[in-house]
Length: 86
Image 1 (cartoon, rainbow, N blue to C red):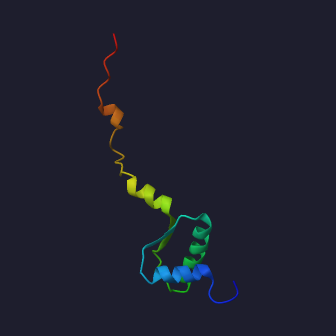
Image 2 (cartoon, rainbow, N blue to C red):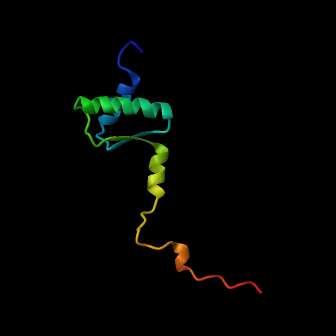
Image 3 (tube, rainbow, N blue to C red):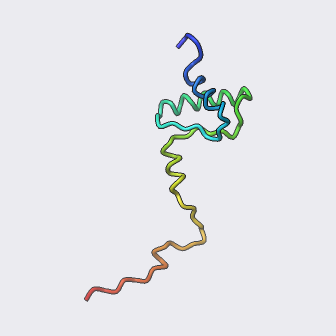
């Protein structure tokens, strides 16, 4: 820990060299470490303000969500009622 660069700063420097919009990880501990480092880089002017650090699960969720129109009625309201069983 005391020799060389801190690991979170090393990883963020590696990521920032690719000019990303998003840095992601699947590890909750790494998410905190990377967020701290990215925020420090933003404060120093070494990272763009728009960069985000997110969990991979959040990226997956965002990729499968479908946009909803608040004026649309729920799908069930558009379907006809089923015929009663006799």
